[in-house]
Length: 324
Ligand code: AHG
Ligand code: MN
Ligand code: MN
Ligand code: MN
Image (cartoon, rainbow, N blue to C red; front, side, top):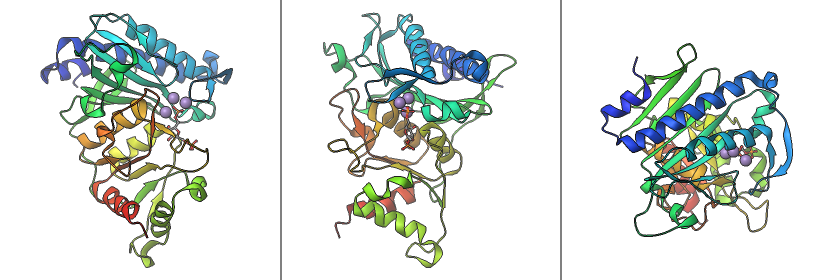
């Protein structure tokens, strides 16, 4: 079976980018090992700290962040990193050709219940226009040269794109290598499955409520078919299901927190997942525009996310554009 780096080398990915990707897979193996040790590694539970997102940090959020940051910044090709868990960017080598944004541990609320979590990452080129600091990261997702995630499930999987389709690699625990297990991933165009946190129903805008009402109405309703719902509370796992068998995943805007309508982060969650979904033939949208075309104004910017099977996302967007 094919290993990660030789597979990408055949795609003519440049050696500097390959080196950054190699560093990411080393981090992923280390995080995977700690997670699978669970309680034995003494790393479960919460810290007393809050991150820049206003969330209580879990010990594993901190540990995964530290690991990724330390190991990536040792790589001479990394100009800087941005993380969900860090207030500002952290700079590496001034000559570094690449920027890496990451969500070190996605699905934090699943850590303590031994359920699915992941790591999401996005790689962009260092801009050559003299920008410095955080401004270097403020590029739309269309500039990403690679994106992916690691799903720490019953098996650890690395799902990855460099803009030439989506491939899935599975960690062979015996040899300690990610091996190619699926290639040319294609999201089915239509679906009977959706993923949304229904407990926020009362906070959504009326168009989103009407879209979900019609899904729930089943075959006797306007959509004329029955839909099933899944919610894992880890975007990595919900998007993985969409990539494997189709579906619609959304975390729409809501009115719970005044002035803060969105939950998912553009740079660490929206953009990398949007690149994967588009590369697999799906749609990734905010409701107003392609996620990948959003011009970020700051690194922790949040967005509304609607992604997955082409026909279903298009139908959802029609409901959202309807002003009645
Ligand atoms: P994180 O653990 O990195 O903060 O991200 C959690 C995100 C995302 O993974 C998931 O889809 C969503 O939050 C879950 O939200 P709810 O708690 O509303 O279910
Ligand atoms: Mn978090
Ligand atoms: Mn996350
Ligand atoms: Mn996280």
